[in-house]
Image 1 (spheres, rainbow over the protein chains, first blue to last red):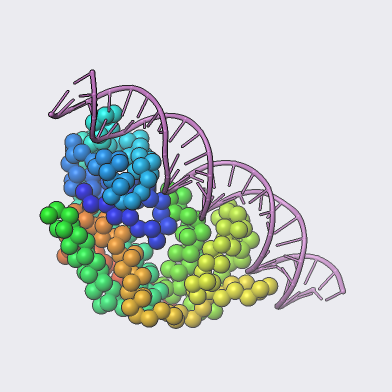
Image 2: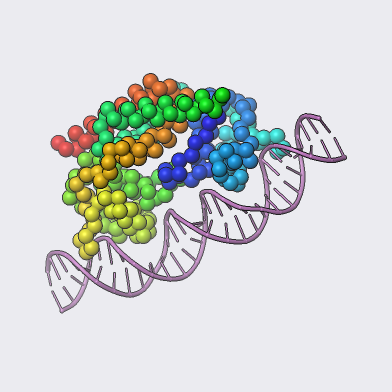
Length: 133
Length: 133
DNA sequence: CAGACTGTCATATGACAGTATGACACACGA
DNA sequence: TCGTGTGTCATACTGTCATATGACAGTCTG
């Protein structure tokens, strides 16, 4: 599980974590029973306070996405069936709309927009591989 | 100009207003010279404090999106980007990173990601065309 | 059992978002 | 000119986000 924070989005850090765990659970990237990173290690990795990660995990539990066992850790819950592909594409489309609007405002044309999109996708792919090695 | 606030998004109200005005300007719904709603009437319509709307307008002006004339109102500026192309691409890249992360968590591959990106770009292009006619 | 890990709780502090309110200067029309 | 509209500035208060700590209880391993 690779987390990444965007401090320019204006969105609370703990909510970004919530969204990312939800998305991973919804897609099946995190299957039922998968352990989540510990609060302290994750906080250190993201250079964020323990309480911020704890707040995200707390929110996820109260929403039924994860289950936390004191002394052991947090685990993805089983009950949520993954979203169908079309639903996942719709979720992504909503997010991309913001980027499209910004591109228009910045007068970036379609070709450039897609070029940057591909570049950023590849960049994360690289990070993923680096993290796995 | 129709504004709509989402209190569940976790995003600051004034930032939502900023994004929506930018979107309207980018899509052509608000062309250069268009007057924006007054601070006080809009605040009342959205059931939000004057200062919140004022803060959004203030941010929009400092970003060069609108022009405000004391005693008259706020108006959309001609769409010119003061930033050099590389800077603009960097700004877009920051926004796209969020979508890329979501795509990874939703297990949407590169081809699908770029397909959705193109589709959303075309969708806004279509809106622009409709607004200009 | 002892130590190292897990999550939990509580407190304090600083920054920001949003509200509420009052006052001010400028522009325009009756 | 006067009234009403516009945006602007200042202050005070509440709540949230995030940080920084310290302390506690449960779980697992050596």
